[in-house]
Every structure is written in C-alpha cells, then in structure tokens.
Length: 568
Image (cartoon, rainbow, N blue to C red; front, side, top):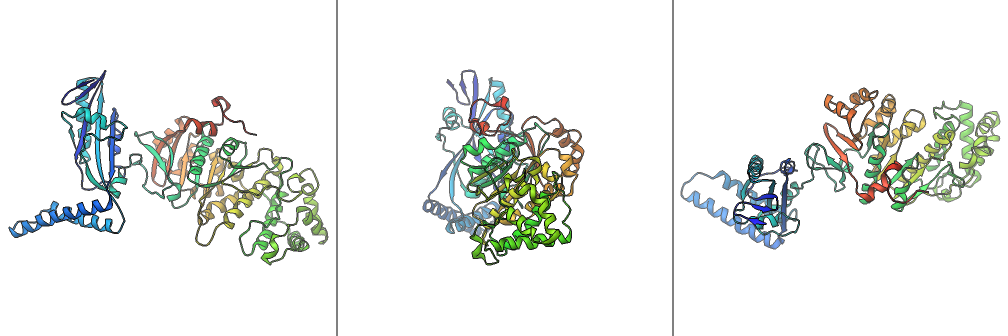
C-alpha cells in the first residue's frame, strides 16, 4: 500500500476518494442513480447516523435562532432580503413542525465516492468524469486530500466513517437516496416491493410493488422455453416471503418442489382418493350461499357435459327447470334450507343430484343420463364422494397433471370456484389482512374460450376488491390475444411481463401493448430470463436473478439441476 496526499495505491489498483461537501436544496426519488450507473468502478458509500428526537429538536431550535438573527440583522441595516436565507428559514420551520408531530426524523449522513483505475492517468480522467456527473446533480465532490487512507476505509463495508463530513437529512430526503430505485418506473410503494432482477440499462436493481398499483393482477407472456415459469415462481416465492397467501393452478407439476420447501399444501385432483364435491356450501361467506351454489351447479353441469373444450350451450328450458328443482330437492333431502344454520350439515353429492333428477320426468332423466359417466361411470373418481381436502395454508397448489383431459374443464372450474369462495369468505367489510395471489400457469388452456375463461375474466375484474390479484402465465400469445376474454384479462393486469416472443406472434403482442420498434426487436432477441416490465407508459428491461437456494426451487429443466429434493 502506498499512501499519497491525493490518491492511494493498492498493488496494481489506484484509487482516490471524494467526499460530498455541497448538496442540492431538493432531491428526487432515486437521485443517486447517475453515480451508480457510472460505467467505471466507483464505490458509493452512504453512512447514516440517526439523531435522537430530543437532540434533533434542540439543534433545529438553535439553527432557527441563528437564521432568524441573521434576518433581523439584515432588516435593521436596511439590506434586501436574502432569498437563500428566507428559504432556509422556511425549511427549518417546516422541518421543526414535522418533527414535533412525529412525521419524520433527522439523520446525519456522509456520502463518499472512491474511484478506481489501473494507472494514475486513467484515475485522473475517471475522477474528472465522476466530479462532472456529481456537479450535474448539484453535488460538490472534493478529494479528501491527505486523508485518502481514511477515505478508502470509509468506502469499505465496515460501517466506519473515518472522514466525518456529514450533513443533516430528514426522513424523506434520506429515503429518496435509496439506491435500488429504477428511474424508469413510477415510484409507488406499499412496503411490499419484490426484487425482480438486474436492470439491463443501468447498474441498478428492479424492485416492483404490485400491491401499490391500481390493481394487483399480473400477466406473463412468453414463448416456450423463455423462462416464464421460472419468473412466475420467483415472483411467487418472494411474495411468500412478505406473508402473501397464494393459490396455484399447476398443470405440469412444476410448483411441487417449491410447495414442499415452504410447507405448502398440495392437492392433486385426478389421483385416487382425491375428490371435490361441486355441491359443497362449506366455505361460502355469502348470505345467499345456497342460491349461489344452485346457480353454480347449472354452470358446472354445462361444462361437465360439454366435452374437452368447455364450450357449452345452455341447457334447454325444460332441462334447466328440472335441474334447478332437483338441486333444491337434493339439498332439502339432506336437511339444508335457506337457513344459514343448516349449511354446516353434510352437502348432497352428485349421485344425490342424479337420483333427484330421476323424479323430474323426461327432462330430468335426460340430464341424469348425461351425468351418469361422472356419477357411476369411468369419470366418477373425482365426484363420487365428499370433498377430501380442504384448502388451508399460506400456499395451496392444485396439481392437475393427472386429471384426465375430458375432466380438465370441469376440474379447473371447480378449483377456481373453490379458490374464489375461500377469498370471498375470508374477506370482511373492512378489507383483508393478508393479500392473496391466484396464479394460473399455462392459462392459454382456459383463455381459449368456454365457461372457464369467463371465470378467469371474473377473477381479473373483481379480485382487487377482495385484496387479491390474478397472475396469469401463458404462451401462445397470439391465440390468447385473439379472444375477447384473453384481451380483457391482459388489459386488466397492471403488471405486464413480456419475455422472448415468437416472430409469428410479435405483431399481435406489439399492437396489444403498444411496443416501439426497439422494444419489438428486443423481444425477438431477448435471452433466457430477460424480461420487459410494462406498467402503463413506463417500461424497463431486466434480467431475473435468483439465489442458489431459490434457483433449485424454481428451475424446471432437469439439465439445470444440481441438488435438491425430488417432488412426489
């Protein structure tokens, strides 16, 4: 180590430390970003020392006294008002009032910049560049001459300020110095920010708070293999860190490892012994829950008998009337009426409904015949008994990989209905205490049309009033955007994440999201894990990042695995 008056040499590394001695009167959010985005190596060290409220109030009182004395002295001598003095006095008075009301605190802060280079001439050039950037930010950066060793130590992550050039900051000014705020995004926060990744256009990080947006919905659109499920699981995991509850519809068993690691609940419809009763009232918080359940049964029967697509025409009037009477008769046979006290009794099964339909003439017998495969035939495994698993816990994953294709429209409809009832039943008139996410992976299967798509549309429109957000993850962007429901779900997402797109779909995506030519070209060439976050007119490109532990939980492709639990 060679210590000189204006610089320091550590082996082959030359460095010089600058201290900030002059500050602007006002700063905006993320005002340190120009220094952090400097392409060379610069260590930016911000030392924060909180002041006790009593000490801060006393120092402010003395400062206001000095300012007021200067003003009176100038007035007594007939001098013109000093604008800077007037502004300082007004600021001090306002700050004193905020401290007295407990709206903020005072801190002593020191900001030091240590510039590194490979030789002495390069160091001089880089120091000139950094001082020029600081000057553009209205910061006076001065070398700590003859104190370079102390300046270098102060820039290390040791929490030691050996220079001691500090000035007072209030809470707002200090929070605006938060170094990881992306200047490309609007500054909104509810205290629930999630780290998304590294900003590709600067040296900062991208943190995003979906819970501070005008709705909590999100959509991830990407071609297969671009890393959309990786990004979705990373977002889900980091929201779980914050205490968010989540429900996941998982068609390919991709979320099982994550659920096991965080103690989530896994429900696997389609496997032996797992049943969901579509006539369950348990969990409904509505005062007219019985009537709502009867109406849902109409929708469910239409989907159940519509085939794989889920696109079903309404039942003929006589069959709909027979079904309605049979539903209410099945509930009455179990002692369940419009009296809410009876809703705790065991609900009728689909077989009870089929039996009640037999007593309603030819129309009822026709509907019963259409239900027979799901009551006693080859598709009866999911419906031939009471509900076996009650959704409970902070993460509930419905793994539907084993659900037969013929049962998936009805099965997913039941799952979404169960999730919706849980969300609405645990919401009070004063709001919710825990935010919730409903994540539907490979949502293109539902968004192609049918009653399942309309159920997603309802979630997208109404989830916010219950403190929930719908997260849709899908490929086949062109197919999704070609449907009215698909476009509505996408347009109702305040958080829109776009990853690499296929050339065949880029025109539809560009039109739907109003992309520029540059953004369009970037999405065609984006690498694995590169994401364009679109929030209204604000756009920022970033690369998703994960720790080693997180990576093991969210990675899909077996060729990326090293160690970790195997899902069962």
